Length: 414
Image (cartoon, rainbow, N blue to C red):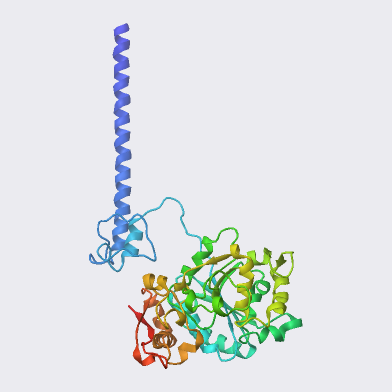
């Protein structure tokens, strides 16, 4: 009896193993059929790509939309082919980045110069932009008509808001005539754009030669004390203006230039600033007018001098970026004195002293004319061009009177 039970147990075990084997074969055949069907769909979607246009058999772990693989790896349709080959488990939709805020103040005859600056920003930038344009009333229609006339695929890269020029009622005339018309408007941006966290303020005579978001990245380098960022007024103290002529306090050894200014306006509005008028630290809104009243007979460069005074007393609150982000004729009139531009090229060109409109600095004017005449429909073709490099070379024709040495002027080089 015991022998029969053993035989029955072995027979049952064999039947169970046989059923398990058949089930495993069935599952394998279903997975193979599913894999073949999926491969067939991929081949159908990929059928429009020639062998020359498809990616080579190289591992592509991710796709960077701003840094495409080289032609040795991918052809012109690499992005489509990589998308077909690369599968991701779950959703990895990248959150859309907030637009970069760019603020400018325009008065008088600065309409065309401002539009050229805005065009340069769109020309090189990859991020969406938002323009905060402060202008006299008679310039508003000119801005709207020109910006709205740009092609849709360009216009879709930016939004804009136009604001009137406005100063505190009690002293509006005094603020408006300070230095250049409307220039001091920048001091009141934190008080007007109350819902805006940060902006990049630039003068109208600025030209971007790199994406705006590149300088925007300095905001992430701020420590907990920084509220703004600017470049030095001079690199070489021997030709500096503030250290030789200023009759008021200024930042650092040579002062700072406010033509390009990153502003964390949330921090500016919240901070209480040290000053030399009272032992009590003052908020931005309470600081400006007393500062002007004390120093108005001693300042030459208007609101820039006031900013130098503020950050002289609050040096821990200022982030200083290299001169290549605010490259001016002073950096190469009598010699090259911006090492950062020599090494990395000019990132932002600042054509102060009207050099875009005369022949004193031919390279500055050439860059301005090229961007001003640039047709908007060709903008996207050159989004990834390398920024020009600017160096100083001898140019005898522009030597100043009563000098024996030829002057050196800036030449943009590729």
